[in-house]
Image 1 (tube, helix red, strand yellow):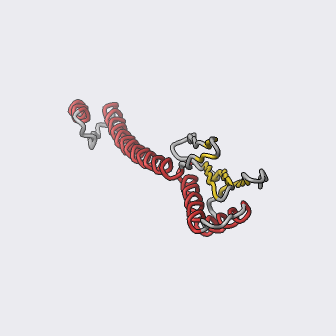
Image 2 (tube, rainbow, N blue to C red):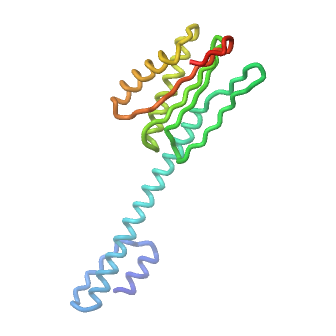
Length: 179
């Protein structure tokens, strides 16, 4: 029975129940054999689940890279060029930059935690920034107002469960005043 079961396992059949009740070492070997096949099945399921999760993280990473890449800004021959590399598949770091009415605004943020939850908060904040830019194209929102609006939206969206620390700096290119 053990020899036949070993051939079955070799052929991929891991659902082996030997049912040997001899009361001796052969029964112990058979019991251990069944336990090993059960562990192999469990490990295969765990491996498949990890592969699925890795695939989802890779997709989330691609989405994050697509959504969160800030634009290149060019000012009088000087360029602000974006570069970001997450320490893991998905991250909670955000930086963005935009130029409006001779004011260069730079945003730096770091969501609490790592992985997908931090990436979600970062995507929410990036969406807030894009929305604010769209709806306030003629306005010059100061850093304090930008932070108040983003904070309100993120707090409502994440119910206070996911957080981000953020700084906003705004350089008036005409006066040189940094706020």
